[in-house]
Image (cartoon, rainbow, N blue to C red; front, side):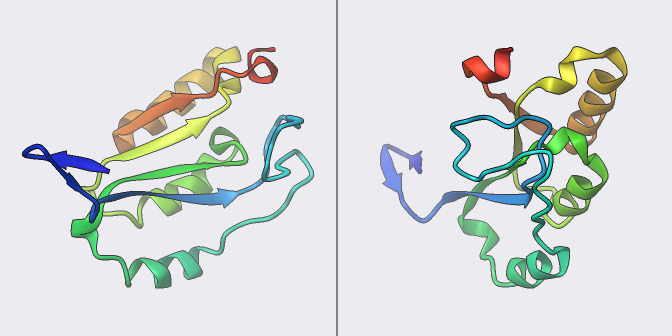
Length: 128
């Protein structure tokens, strides 16, 4: 939802894709049952077809999560590339990329290149 000139604009929405359910963690609370063995993926061709139906004037922002985006940045890049540059984008991550400098740099380069707002989950399981 967006407030424009003091009025609630219900025509604008945040939207998200879950390109993959593969994750490097197995959190007990995960409603998607994401994990290292989950091979479920959204087909890029299906996403492209769907996006042709989107009225971009109604979209406030577009997000990406999963699974864990940082473990397959090439695949996530393909999905990010489908969204117009003018649409603000965000990524939701478990933050495990921050445990090693090379992974941190790789992920932050991806974020910087795509101008993504980053949301890091802060649950107990993720902090471990």
